[in-house]
Image 1: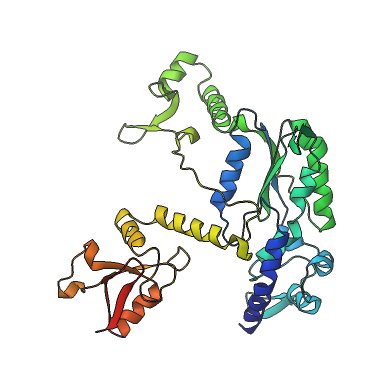
Image 2: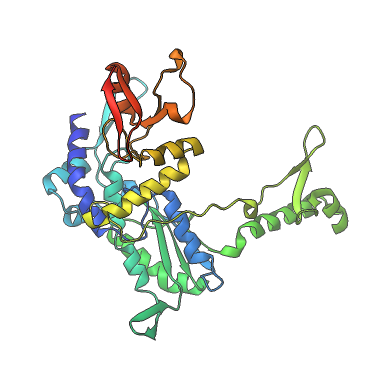
Length: 371
């Protein structure tokens, strides 16, 4: 436990530096970034008529287990003695007889380590710029340039995609550059999982596989017979079968997913930079407005996003509890005038110390007193 606490202490100093050096379109295991941001960036680089049509779906082979210790000791900007202890700590494993055996670690960073995700991100930072250097730029004048090859990288920790205008660009220009970048750090592609795809293969791929399956199962049946048996044409040729009760069960299609747009975090936004403080506060307020129910949203607005006990912001990170001003067992109702949002810890204090929270008295605060 002491070792993990020490690692967390060092990480608190390393994390701000990692953010300053991070790739703009890296989204995994970073503060104020999420999988939704990565998905939205994928949408931005692939959704337009003129967007790239080919994608390198990359997978790094045993990323956490094979990172070069030598590269990290030279390039990770922290106390080398402590970093070496993290990397060379090894692990214990018990056999079937209950006897413990020590295994030294000669490469990689422990996946369960507190700092491991940040270290892995720092190892892969710089990849986006290397990929961008593969692009052929077109000068539009007045300092405006665009990539002709439509090369873009989106990364979520050790998983990433690279887009391009053609398969040849990905195979001949992009992939060799990435292989060289990874090799320097002791890493390599997983050849079984790394592939180059056209974005037109999402539902088309499934449809093609289904047709091949039908032809194998019913080689002597006509095409019309197969269509009548397996496809419903009322909503655009959906494959179906029947369940035990004889009801039609339709195959899910990706194009039927209801899309809810997400406002992606700005690529160069840094939560450790005071200049971005207001930007991240507004993002937190927007997240709160979306995630809480309508009645809670009205309470949040009425309180101007603040807990009336401690007068600090209520966010998705702090969490919140709904508190009855007049307690339910005393006849308190679930109405707006009898509800207030509190931080979980503030909520516990109100009950433990038998404090009362009065309805909002002014635009800026609510009254809190001892009962």
